[in-house]
Image (cartoon, rainbow, N blue to C red; front, side):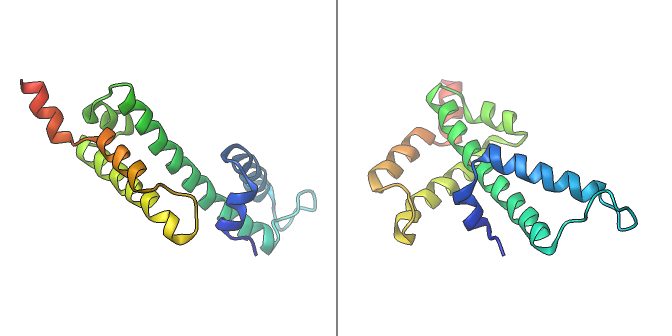
Length: 137
């Protein structure tokens, strides 16, 4: 049975989406009464579920990397929150949770950030309330 962890190593975001699309389309078109398109096997249905999780994880990772790029380019948390359809505080909190996850990963034996890299990411992130002070000044 495929797990998200297995599939994360095998697929990029693009290839995971392509495979998901193939399976999802076949699932949508298959009919138990139709001999033309075979319904998904149990293995394929489980793969489809796991691929959905892989896509969500990879998209979330990409989102946070783009948040870092936006901060580097001078975007405020208000602007980032608006681009994500949320508040500046919620965007900042989600980004800081992601930084914490990256800092914890080396302990789990996965790629992650050391203390200096995590500190640099936190410095770049700043705090939303610091921007409000700067905007009033």
